[in-house]
Image (tube, rainbow, N blue to C red; front, side):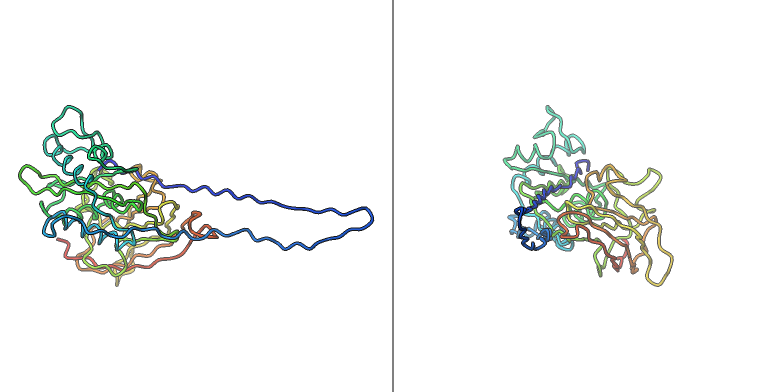
Length: 335
């Protein structure tokens, strides 16, 4: 997945202050008391999220399974649901066909069989869609494991760093998906995007895994590009990725992060991925990932603690939110 270029929106606010003074005559002076004016505070941005619309997929199809799993994930993060768009479906299916013929790539080359556009947005537009942003995730059997399962494809994406970041991008409104079923189509492609973005509340904070979650994975799913140094095997030398996100236009700072197995006192080592440390997250100043440097144990409860600060005009009158967070989750069998 290469097309993960997330750009944080910036808001500019101009404040104009005016002052009035009075004067008096030469023989007498009249002074009128003035009441101090308190500058208006910035309200916390209200959430503007769309409602879910029932898709046209057959309820027994793997595309429907993917849709259910996708919006269950986004709901767990307090994000707006994504709705099916036929143009995105057609673009995803066409690109899956291109990948099956020509090999895995997010680009397409004119003249090659199956060509419908050089990038995901061009392919959605070719199918009659309209968008201001389109991103794309691709899964193939070698990387997603259980071929032909929409839920397993979504799980593989969410269990990684960059693919999860794509699917939790807050402005998204639309998606289309083609699940590889074997035979002539083995690749699974999902296109996501928006024309008019969704917005979360200015004081939003999302953490995944969420507090009380069970059945959490024990390692980071391999992906391309690879977030780790080449000498690290994600399957055996990483734990489950933990993501922390604030509202899309804000800047997030996370300090004092620890993950500890409940019943022990020594925190696990972690690697941190942010916009300032990872070019593949460039522009996503509201996002941080922490990945343990060892597999998590199966059927085990872990506690994460951290301090966070969120800066941005949408947060309200102070412009900054700062607090501590304490979350507990439990891993699954690790299979």
